[in-house]
Image 1 (tube, rainbow, N blue to C red):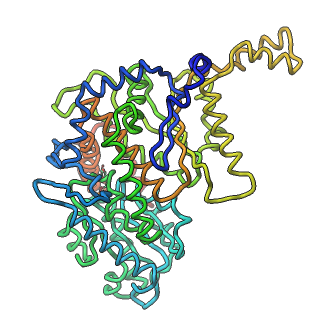
Image 2: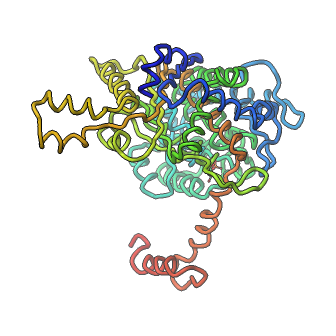
Image 3: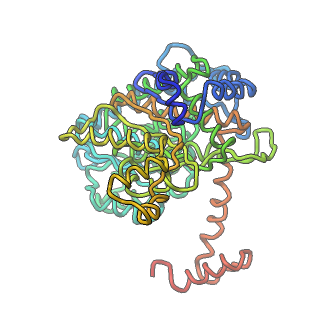
Amino acid sequence: MRDLFDADPGRFERFSLECGPIFLDYSKNRITEDTLRLLTELAESVDLADWMLRMRRGDHINVSENRAVLHTALRNRGNEPVLVDGQDVMPAVREVLQKMRRFSESVRQGEWLGFTGQRITDIVNIGIGGSDLGPMLVARALRPYGSVGIRTHFVSNVDGGHLSETLVKLDPATTLFVVTSKSFTTPETLLNATSARSWLVRRLGSEAAVARHFVAVSTNTQAVTAFGIDPAHMFEFWDWVGGRYSLWSAVGLTVAIQIGMDHFEAMLAGAHEMDQHFFSQPFERNIPVLLALLGIWYNTCFGAHTHAVIPYDQSLARLPAHLQQLDMESNGKRVTRDGFTLDFDTGPVIWGEAGVNCQHAFFQLLHQGTRLIPADFIVPMKTLYPLGNHHDILIANCLAQTQALMRGKSEQEARQELAAQGLSGEALAQLLPHKVFPGNQPSNTIMLDKMTPHALGSLIAMYEHKVFVQGVIWGLNSFDQWGVEYGKQLAQRIIPQLADEVDTHEHDASTRGLIARYRRLGHGR
Ligand SMILES: O=P(O)(O)OC[C@H]1O[C@H](O)[C@H](O)[C@@H](O)[C@@H]1O
């Protein structure tokens, strides 16, 4: 890459692109114009444009579940209809957005009161996976937009510590629980919701309190009603929205209450802007398509196993976690949508951490380890938290890292540096190999204007489309997740077996031994 930069002063201009608040510099990649031409030919060879059209027009591209994939309809700001099985879904989408607006405004303005007549100060979203990670990311990133000071909390883990630690800080009289579950059958979520309800009823002294302190977000009215939440307090979404693509739906209710519906809709508009870019731009000028192709270039042609996501923005600290579900649950598959087992690698391991912190932790391996690790560096140009020169320092670090990764430090440069420090002879020779950086580590730099709802919407939508494109190229159905089921089934079998006297012979010796040990020493005793 060093040589490519030296040979071409126009490389940055040539290999960078803009869409609304997003600027992508992909010049620090191991690519030439030829590489990109070949990669876009690859996209053409799998009829990517046709798949994009099929997604957009509501075909059942999630074949194993026989469902359309239309999270783009949730943020469609235009007037055109979006058809699922011949029916326009936009009126229902707009109706739920209106219901979210009415409800979030009434909570924010203190019109929706708790059972004892007090206004709501704290929202607890109870959900897991797609019903947790997306809204949690957004709630954290857009905290400065929460003008009325309502605090949000996210409880996902069935570990009693997660709920207990959250509740201990809260007053039941001023707390609203948003139980978020697409299926409303997820055991962890239902158990957390049941325990939260017991806490509320015990502390407020009446079952009748539940109606003022619990609302639900789901596709399953029956299960919501069975849980004891009035369907009037249920916010609906639909089976054509995948869990990990659902934050644009009523799954964002907690966020909408925190930042207000105008900001929530600005986030939808940002996502819509990226959708329009994705559906209209030629592949070689299309940000999600290029990111997908670059990922495939390293994954398939260089054998890179992982992809790092490094936000240089503390408020995006949960972005890697959200992208882990988005990417790994979508493309962590070895069988094509037609049922063929692939003999090449598909979805990479996604990982990462907020920038600067990771420089002091794992970046050593990126700089001098043996592995190729492509990375996305994400950084806002303007900060929402002006504090002295902190932001300049943050930006400088981000730029320095991508530069060091790209350039490396040659043996000659390292030698000169050591000599300038007064080293020579044996001492210099001993240190020299440790001071050399191979470089040539690829990265994309994604600059946002500023962390606004609009920019965040564009950013997340960009990654959704990247994942879709990669799935199309690998021949996968990116919208099912059968791999998650097996462990769930086994857990259901093991739960009753943790009690004494239940036969465990069906299990392997390890599982049997661990159950026996838990029976003897565990049970929270
Ligand atoms: O929203 P829910 O139906 O409760 O599902 C929550 C999560 O659980 C599942 O195990 C899936 O793997 C996820 O895709 C989903 O987001």
